[in-house]
Length: 223
Image 1 (cartoon, rainbow, N blue to C red):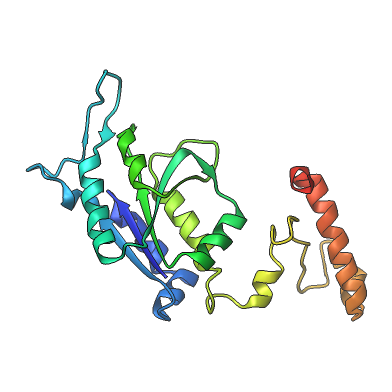
Image 2: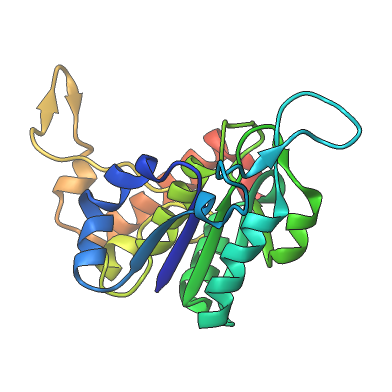
C-alpha cells in the first residue's frame, strides 16, 4: 500500500513513521508512506498556501491551487489514488471503514487541513471526507496518523491474524478482559475459569464478558 499525506507540518510525522508497528511495516515493504509538504506547490514567492476568506471573517483559509497541483502530480502517476479529506464535518470513521480501505484501496492520499478551514472547492477533488470525532483539532495531521495506523495494522503481514480476530468491534462488540502474571495482585485475582484449561468454558466466558462490557460501556453497538 502507498499512503501520501499532504501537510504543512511534515515534522509532526517523524515519530509516527519511525517507531513501533508502522516502522516495521515500512521496513518490510508492506506500506510506503510519503509525507508531502504542499507549500512547495505554491505559486507565490513566499510559498503562501492560505489567504483571507471572501466575505470577511476571522482566520486564514487554505487555497485550492496548491492542493490541486499536488493531487494532479499524484494522479498523473496513479489515477487510482483515493483522496481523503480530513474534516470535522466528514463521515465518522469506524473500524469497518478501516477494514474496507485496507482491503480495497492500494493508494491513499490524505489532505490535512489547517488554520480556519479550506476553500470549499477542495471538496470536489476528494473521494471521501472523514472525521475522527465530534471535536475540532488544529489540523488534520493527528487524524491522518490515527486513520493510517488503523489501516496499516490490518494489512497482511503487519500483525498476526490471531491478534486481529479477537479485537474490539470485529463482531460489533467490545473486547473481553485479559490478564497475565501474577495470578493475584493486591487482592485482585485472575478469574478461575482462565486457569482451568477448559477452552470451551474460556470461550463461553469471554463471549459473555464481551456482551456485558458492550452493554455497559457502548450499548449503542448492540442496536
